[in-house]
Length: 293
Image 1 (cartoon, one colour):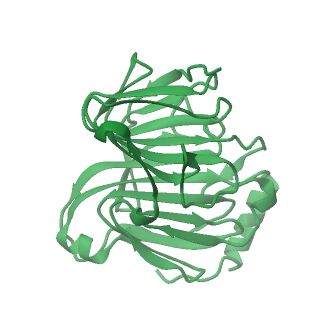
Image 2 (image 1 turned 120 degrees about the vertical axis):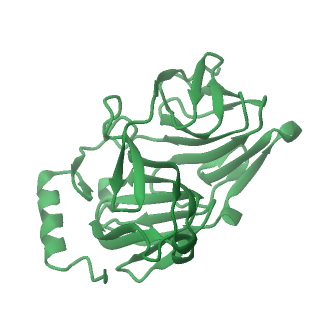
């Protein structure tokens, strides 16, 4: 028997801050009072670059070389193009609708910036970066990289031409997403046309939140969630109803919590303070490899 998964709180976009000189983000967690690094586990950080117009520039904006250990970064491009390089030799470009899923695990150096031609022309830019925690038994596994283009996404067509559900990770109905994950995770982009209503289920015990990328929706018939707002759900049921007040795009995050201690400092997320200290020692001694600025 199903039971409604109720909204705990609708969170307005926090004030923006800059990450490097190319990403103007709202940090929904862990920077807000309602959500720390545990409440949305396995998702431990959500930076949202809401829609912004960047002027043309010859030198691309971005974030220079920086390390990561103990988790994964998931970058989702909604508008604009982002290029990246890492110390494992991976590089590429994610364009509108694409995703870069990087497993830092035992340690990697990384840099990301506006793609060269996008930077020269300027234009609309909108993206999300998630940090997804790793269980302790795989935190020190080898880094890996998944380039997921829009064409690879699983797609579920909503009946009566009501929209599309793009499945990045996990599954929706019989449609599976392409991302390989270490713990059970569902990540969807739900495109709903104005007036469309859908009802679906997510595990009662999974931490769940929605970010409205565009448009406005009514959740469970009485919670309005507008553009750039985040809906945090209680772990009290499994059924969710969405009704689009206008053409809307919603990022859905839901996953099984990792019930382990979290120790974090800067770009490292481990289980103990000692492991954080070891991460800095390994980084300073060059064990994360080399990546030119």
